[in-house]
Image (cartoon, rainbow, N blue to C red):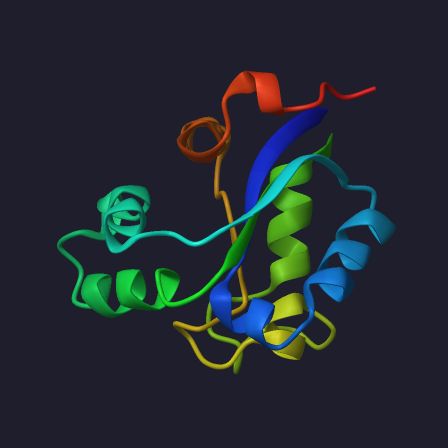
Length: 141
């Protein structure tokens, strides 16, 4: 089933210069880029995006990190895009991530973990709409 998911290459991975390697992994695994842009989130934008975590103890450090430098936001599409992206990313904690996953290869730690991906279809719709108007998204084949 073809679907869309949001992916973010976080500031730590952008700073390491691994944007191309991450995108190559997506494409090599059947995910197409339907939209993409580099942004620098303000603290307010990061807080809005991660509002679901507002009451969590890591909220301030997470939003500080996400607003600390450029990030690449993109819409990935393809068959089972959400599950495929999450498999490619690996566990949230890179120490627990499987060998070869993006987080195992590129993450700094549990918070600076290189990439973000939507966890469900409803979340994907909300997250995509946060960064991309429909006009900016290329329809799948």
